[in-house]
Length: 112
Image (tube, rainbow, N blue to C red; front, top):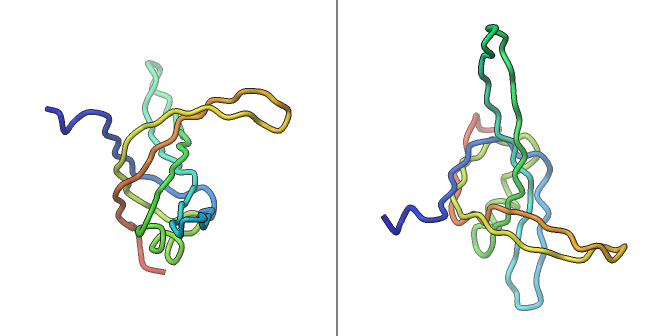
């Protein structure tokens, strides 16, 4: 069961063109948002559509594929883990963020 700890699998649409950063050590990091959608019916039978937004981070060699093929609206399946961190914004306020650190992904949908 240890392989099931902190594992996230999502299928959704990319919400923005990925931001690629080249680090001083030569590595790359990619960041983008991913929208997942679900629908359900209320007790009255009304259909409700819900969209959740996830911050995704990906490191290393896979970033080259993200950089080349992934744009806003592209459908992806990702697998990774949840991480939380804090940072100080420009106004000096401490902010907290939860991200999905992806370690694998599959490009879905029709070829463009």
